[in-house]
Image (tube, rainbow, N blue to C red):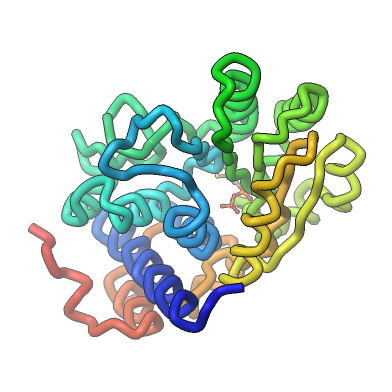
Length: 286
Ligand SMILES: Cc1ncc(C[n+]2csc(CCOP(=O)(O)OP(=O)(O)O)c2C)c(N)n1
Ligand SMILES: [Mg+2]
C-alpha cells in the first residue's frame, strides 16, 4: 500500500514521463506515443521502487535486468532512464536524430546507459530474457530478477509461445513477464486482428503464475510487482490492463496514435492536457 506522499510523488513522475514522451516524439517528428503512454505507471513503479538497479553503476552485476521487448515504446523507457539519472535530460531531445544514442528502437551498441538489449523486432524479447534468467539462476547463482515487457499484439508471434513453454519447463521463478494489455495493435483491436484471449487461462495452461492488475493504478501496479518478486517455482506473468495513448485526450484508445508524432497544434493540446504551460514544449531545444 502506497502512502499518500509516495502516491503523489509517483504521480508527478508519471506525468513528467508522459510530457517527455510527447516532447520527444514531437521534436523527432516520428515515433510511437500510444504504446509508450500505456507503460508509464509501470515504468514509474519499476524504476522508482521495485527494480534493483544503480543508475550510477549501470553495469553492476547484481542488478535486475529489464528487456523492453515491445521496443517501439522506447520513448517511455528513455524518459524513465533520464528521470532516474542514467543520462542527462537534454539528450532526450535527440530522439531519432542521426548519431543519437536514442534511436527509434533501443540499440545497445549506441551505449545509452540502462539499455540492456537491442529490441524492436517483436517476438524475441521473452526468449532473450529467458536466456538471462537461465544464466542468473543456473550458472551465476544470482538472486536478481529478469523483467520482460511485451505488447499484447506482439504475443501473436509464435516464438513467444515457445518461450512461454520453455520458461515454465526450466522453472524460471526469477523471470517476470509483463503484458501491456491495451487491446490495440498497429492496425486495430487485438481481439479483431488475431484473438489472444482468454489470456490468463492460456498462460496458466503453459505453467505460469498469473497476476492481473490495472496498469494505470499506481497502487495496483505496486502490489502486482511486489507479489511478482516472490519466488514460487514458476515464472510469473503480470497481465496489465491498460489504455493505449493514456493521459492525452485525442490519443486515448486510438490505433492511429500507434506510430506517429503529434503536430505542433496537437503537441500543445497534449502539454495542456498534462497541466504544463505551452512554452515548455520548446525549452532546451537547439
Ligand atoms: C517482427 C515485427 N513485425 C512487425 C513489426 C512492426 N510493428 C511495430 S509495433 C507493432 C504492433 C505491436 O502491437 P502491440 O504489441 O500491441 O504494441 P502496443 O499496443 O503496446 O504498442 C508492429 C506490428 C515489428 N516491430 N516487428
Ligand atoms: Mg497493444
